[in-house]
Image (cartoon, rainbow, N blue to C red; front, side, top):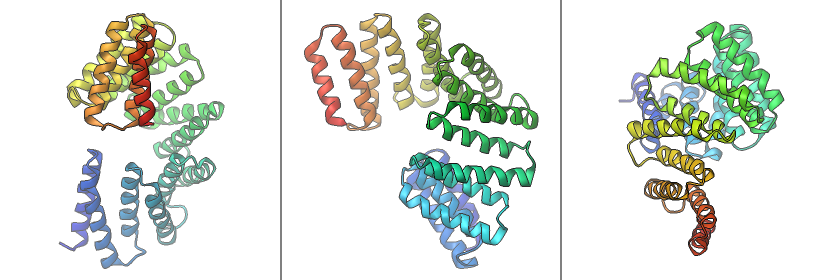
Length: 331
């Protein structure tokens, strides 16, 4: 049970559990694999770096940023020393460290690591490789987080262009790039320009995954939000409803994604003055999240604020006041 092959199997199992968001179950497998590799190969081996990288990604997903950072840094150091500064694994570790720093709003540090990762991938694979496109997309995400839309847009466009050239026009990574470009254009208020990117993303994902996949639901929700923002409520509504139906089919009726969809649809109905229908959906979304995410989660405060605004619009001031006060207590 202490062989390197056993440790590699533990990593594979841990990644599988992590993909299913079973973080607490995955963590001991990562830790055990790391310990085995350190005992067999010493503290500065590429296999140790791999285990450190994977464990750091798990901690990042759990929001344990302070614990994740030194693991990423150690993985970078080992890979640079053992594999050389221009190895693709070094670039992967730099990208992951940059992602962690980005989530901590340490944008300047993150930018440096993303750019270095891209430079390595361009040196290893050439300028038109999907790894380069991935790095460009990550750097564009960073700029978008900072509201630097004009810097983000050409990077997204280049990432899509590389993806289409190397992976084909109907690949999931191309769809991701198109969706990101649509989100950027929407954030800039360029709704008409964003819409065809969402529609193309939707066609690709439906072709790859079928009509009832969660990725399809996400794009349907994004497209509905776009139309909602344009005041095209009748066009938006069926997209919201279809997204909700898919999430219910994939996750069951009591899931945060379903609650999100219901809340979004309720917001549209409120804009149409359909207060009774909207109130029912807001309350249903709140009850769902109360059951799934707990009594003091920020999402509940958002639901309560939405509900209070709606109740106030109907003249139900006492009920609205109660909802606002409960939301304040959660915050």
